[in-house]
Image (cartoon, rainbow, N blue to C red; front, side):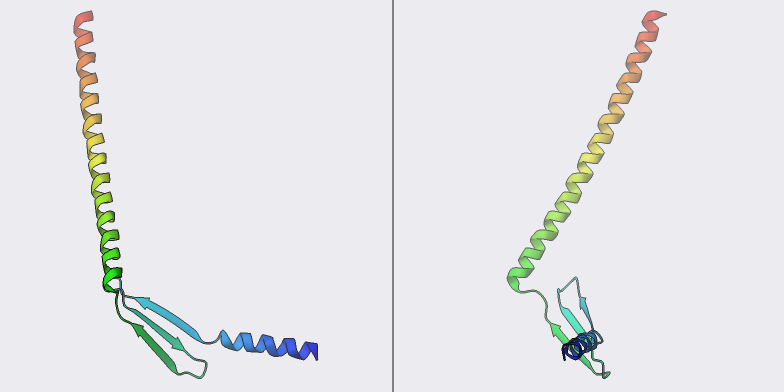
Length: 103
């Protein structure tokens, strides 16, 4: 009795695994479409519209922060490169001046 109950439970879980579902989200609008293919071949399609007004504001804030971070990172990188170039140029000038004094 116990073995048959376990076998029945295993079969029930394995048949549930045959139904495959895929979810696709449109990044621009946030709309989600879920397609589920049942084991008998029929399809169930569920769709949810895009973001709510509050959700859109949160998304816009996140995107703005991302853009600001990229801009700040680029500014830091280019500033560091300019500083490095100036230090290298100054060191060269000091070296040339030192050679002139020695000679």
